[in-house]
Amino acid sequence: MRYLTIDEALNRGSGAVNLRGWVYRERKSNKFVFIVLRDESDIIQCVISKEKNPELFEEATKLTIESSVRLTGELKKDDRAPTGYEISPVSDLEVIQIADPFPITAEQSLELLYDNRHLWLRSRKLNAVLKVRHCVVGAIHEFFRSRGYYLFDAPIFQPIQSEGGATLFEVKYFEDDKIYLSQTWQLYAEAAIFSLGKIYNMGPTFRAEKSKSSRHLAEFWMAEMEAAWMKLDEVTEVAKDEVRFIIQEVLKHNRKEIEILQRDIDLLERYAKEEYPTIKYSEALDILANEYQMHVPWGKDLRTIEEGKIGEYFNVPVVVTHYPTKIMGFYKPPSEDKPEEALCFDMLAPEGYCEIIGGSERSLLVNDMIKRLEAEGEDPTKYEWYFDLRKYGSVPHSGYGLGVERVVSWICGLDNIKDAIAFPRTMTRKNP
Ligand code: ATP
Ligand code: MG
Image (cartoon, rainbow, N blue to C red; front, side):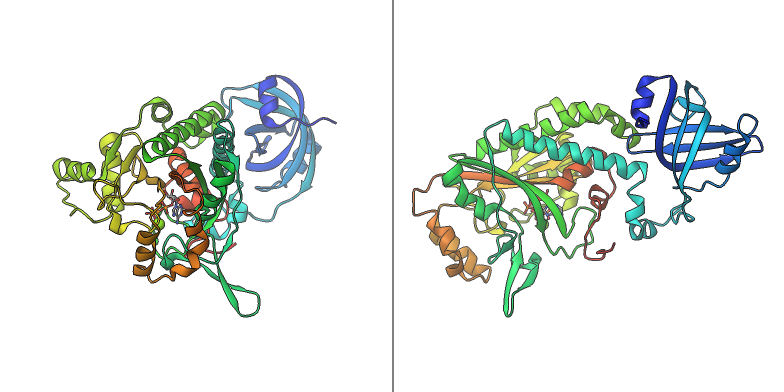
């Protein structure tokens, strides 16, 4: 017996089909049982008639939400059905398992949904998000591979920090040693570019974020790149091309998901083709002051609310460069003409999604880095291997990290980043 997915059946348009899946919705009357069948691809209404098949009708009345079934029937166009087609009549029905009462019903608290995440994954929304995420991840690999970047994997256990001690996850390392979970792939990538030139990676990243924001996870996936010889003005253009490419791929492969998520497709079309501006941090402060009466003193980092306004002002992703050196990580170099400004950038997404990428040129100034590490309370001797990279054929180089869930969240128009990953980890959520 050959089974079609619902999607394959809908494409066929008519005739007898065999389907298998789960009961998404069910409704019973005296004469009919209507079930909406769900599989990985779509949903379809299936009609079981008492008059035509009393035994099947009897069997079907026992079905509960999420029961698993195999069935056979005639596919017909019907404008009243949820997807424009239905299986009517169902001529054969095999019940695989009658599901217990499903804990997720129409009106649910968010907490209950997160507690039942293992079951909530079946929802049309999460199914759609996970498919978009699949496409985004594939697009990132394709983007870099087709441009001559090599995949390079760095250790997840790392003995030094790179993004500030406050968000480090420390874990026991054998008997009486400790180590940290990766906050970024970057420092190891900087070693590898001297061998491979242009590299990228996408991997799990860990930060003990103590904020309860809707944009931070404790475990997320970061897609990073690093390239020898590349300067700030070039790396920002790679980032823009990457984001446009990701959106183009989603538009190519995920029309149905975009519709299910009720995401504005015209907006995505615009993000896929328009130019993204580059401005300096100091220009961002001017825009905030002049357009929004928000007076951020030079030297302060932009907060979410301010990033949001910059995103609103441009209405496409915008690259902001030259943040104040003193608030940047030790490896972000001061610019030559204005050392108080660092050769770094963030990309801010519009619609309140804010920072999706952070990157920079990498400092070649060992003494400056030592001083800045010391100021952060770090022991620079632990970074000897990293400073070696500045001693043996040092070259200008740059890189950035893109938050996969931040991008998925934005593309899907999600309210919370937790829905951009299957099993979210945050300060207050580690189950299931
Ligand atoms: P933010 O200021 O928003 O916390 P960041 O400056 O700490 O971000 P980077 O260190 O530049 O972020 O990391 C690169 C990218 O990784 C960010 O632009 C973002 O897309 C993503 N990212 C960083 N922290 C998180 C997190 N806790 N959860 C999800 N994504 C994150
Ligand atoms: Mg952060």
